[in-house]
Structures are given as structure tokens and as C-alpha cells.
Length: 282
Image (cartoon, rainbow, N blue to C red):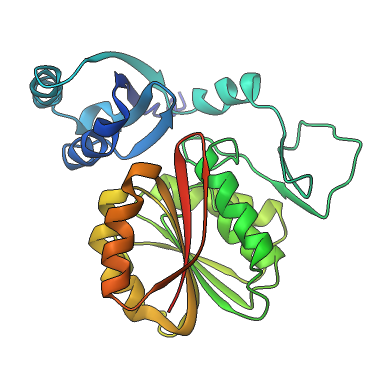
């Protein structure tokens, strides 16, 4: 009798909270076993393998924050392979600035666009729907990294790395701390016939060997960016560009203050649905 394939059970935590608390909660939950996050207008969803999560610790953490701010949450079990099925039933094509089309293989789109990206996200973040990803893609079109070396920090689906190659990057290194994201991004690289992207499993930019980068892309969150900003600055070549997103407009001042101390000059910024995107030059 053949063995049945192992189904990994994930816990999906849905949190409704004030925007000011999303980033800190995500950072705290990442420390106790949650490794994938999807932010939305009312808060965020977090995902973790059931076997790797201390449920009592999770509940204790949420109750602590519930005593400080209005907060509600729910937890449900999902099978990992079911994510893509749920996504397909809700995922429409994305069009950005009437120039970038993001779709999956089951979409039929008659109009052609200058840039077309195929994405199958599964359990990874980055479909172009979120305001942070959309702004990063838009700025890559505005500042194309033609002939440049690019790092995609926290690549998720690999969508920004794909965009960088489509904009002419000579070499792209995409990394993430989640093996599932690396597997997913490599699938998406093949879908888009990308030949100049290398995917790497790493927990931070300090673990990769890619000196003298022309461009670094970091669509993560405020806390991680603040922790890694010094390393981003060190890795960038003179005149190199740093694209940042994954945080709220009220976080711009904190990030800009630290970036300025590191010799990075803000050359462009945008805001969409209270999410910000910044472009710096070294």
C-alpha cells in the first residue's frame, strides 16, 4: 500500500487592530513561529505551521496587546495546498499605471501591456494587489535598473526580482527566510522565463555575498528595515538606489532620519492607502 502524502497543517491567525499596532504585532508574532504575513485594511493575517507554534504563547501575547488597544482575533486551520485554490477563486488580474499587467495562467486578458508578469503566489506575499508592491513596481518602471546588479530582500513570490529583470537588470539575487517562498519564487521565475535571477534562503542581508549592489529592493516592514538599513547602505555602490516599502506613511520620519544618518538621500516617495514607498540614493 502506497503512503499518503503528508499534508502540512497551517494556522491562520486573523487580527483586527489599529494601524499603529500592526508592525509591532507582526514583529512579535514572527518571533514565536509565524513566518508569513498578509496585511489588509483592518489589520493582518499571519500563518504558521501548527506543529511549530506554541499556541498558549500566541494567545498570551495577543491578550497582552488587547489590554492596551482595541484588538480582536480568530484562528483557523488550513491545509497548505488549499491556499492556491482559495487564491484562484478571488484573485483578479492587476494592472499598474496602465503599463504593468500581473496575472496568472488561468487569466485571459485581451489587451497587451508593456510589462506582463505571471505569478502563482501560493503561501507567499507579493501579487501586486497590495499598495506596497504596486508602488515598488511603479518605481522600478520609473527607475529601471538596466544593466545593474539588484538584490530583492524578502522576495516572497519573487515579483520584484522578476520586474527588475524585465527592466533590464544584469543580475538579480532574491532571498527570503522561508523555504516555501524560495520554492514559490523559483516557480515564478520559470513561468516568466527569467534567466538572470538567483534565489537564496537567508534570514537577512548580512548572510548573502553580493558586494557592490546597484539596487536593493526591500518591501518588508518597518522593524526589519530599521534593523537592516545599515547593511543595505554598506552593500550599495556609490550612486546606488534603495527602494523601501512595507510600512505606513507615519513611519516615514523614523526611516528617513536613520537613512539620512547613513548618507542616503531621499529622491522619491509615494503614498497609497496610507502605505508608503521611498527611493533613496547613496
